[in-house]
Amino acid sequence: MAEMSSDSGGGKKKKKGKFILTEGGSRAKKVSTRVDMTPMVDLGFLLITFFIFTTTMSKPASMEVKKPSSEKIEDPPKVPESRTMTIMMGKDNKVYWYMGINDPDRKKIPQVNITDYSEYGLRKSLREKDEAARNETGYKDKTNKDYASKGVIVIIKPLDNSTYKNIVDVLDEMKVTDITAFAWTEAAPVDLTLLDKSGLNK
Amino acid sequence: MPKVKVARKSTAIDMTAMCDVAFLLLTFFILTTKFKPKDPVAVDIPSSHGKQIKAKEIVLITIATDGKVFWDTDNPQIRQNTLEQMGTRYNIQFTSEEFTQFKNAGAVGVPMKDLKGWLALDADTRNKPGNLKGIPKDTVLLGNELADWLYCSKVAYKAILDKDAIIAIKGDKSTDYPAVRTVIKTFELRKILRFNFVTSLEGKDETAAK
Image (cartoon, rainbow over all chains, first blue to last red):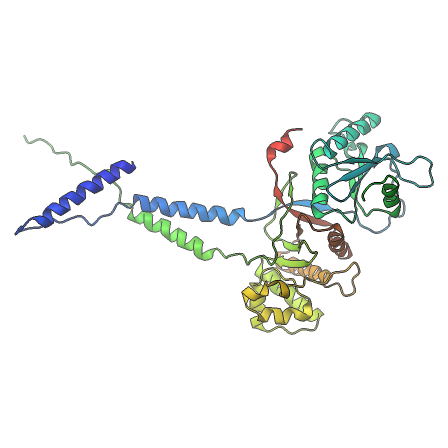
């Protein structure tokens, strides 16, 4: 199409030249002043499209977070230890997690694992633990109304030397692995001593 | 009988009218688009997969790398209403000139006592590092100006849009957790337990690959 229009343009020019050169020509042929507007229309609409897209695309996307109220609940629901997973975010993008409850009065100290935020790190552990918890409770049917609370229960505790990105990453993993029973709280002193004892987060 | 001459009609359509329409629309779009005021600090937001929500009107709390906090919202009416309330709370009288400046100022990150002086500056010098102190924040309500900003914008949002405010946090990837914690503690003090994290969308194929 481009070639065609340039051809015709060239043709017109030649004619024009010819008539100007004619000496003593009694009548100069009228040259059409019409310009082909098609490319200009194309350009106009292209710019419109560009403006529409760039203005609507600049709205930020966001993920929703629900935080439990920090007020003390009188009678907290009993959480089975074997299904409780505590995740702590430490420095240099490291994640520490353990199963069960960390109570210094007990003899059994939970085993702390180190992992990272990759697909084969935290996500794999979460999937494994969720599956194990579901095997234990027998709730595997997603349509069951108790489904959400019968998988693994995750407690997220960011440590002081973690970053904002770490929180977003962990909350995002919850979405990806479809775990809805999770809570975000502050790390307790006993958690810090547990990490110290294990020689981690230094 | 003479032959009937079929007049040859040109297939070329006069594009002038269409061109006029195209440029008229273009002019309209250019003129109605309001440029976003420059962000006071560069914030590198983290990415996430999950469900992404696109909200039209949000109250945005930006946390910079160094923990400084900024307040921002796009709606000029909410901005005006919030400033009116803040002025009453802190006993500061703002002139109509200052209200106009405030509506177009973009993100606000100065203590209330400096706000008048900050609004008197021109748009370029406002965002110079020395002029951005961040909104004072704390884990208690006393002296926590961020809590007042949140409260006032919540009330303003309700009054103007008749909806519960959508409040979002925009943090830098490398912002330390203690700074984030202080902001979230303030949210809790103001009974804001549902909020959003502004993130960019990560590749969808990753989510599919389970």
